Image (cartoon, rainbow, N blue to C red; front, side, top):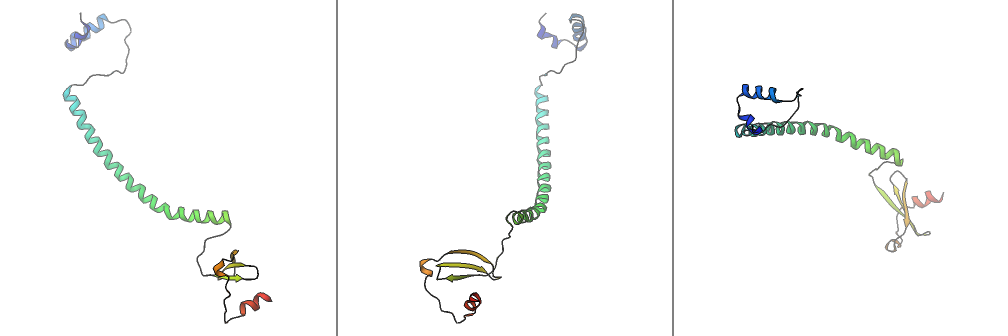
Length: 144
């Protein structure tokens, strides 16, 4: 008998043949079964439906993740600022600064409005001109 024609037998005849001709001790196993055209079409419909549901859930998930990211963003910015302050021992501050020339040593000192020296550098050639001021309080305070 052609083994490929067993599938064409009725269910009852197929069972009798398989039980009668098989070796002792049958086993259970997972195996591929070929689908008919109608079954393939049904699976394609199922794939389309699953795709729609998956896309909807992913969209909902993205919105939920965005809510959490928006809540987390300011905390992370504050955390990084505090971490930087701890790491460097300073914070970034915006305020008025003054450039004070030291013509004798050919230097310029950048000083904050609180009196902290922020930077000292060599004077640039275009800055080497003397500036006359009406107030001599700085010179008096520095010379004391």
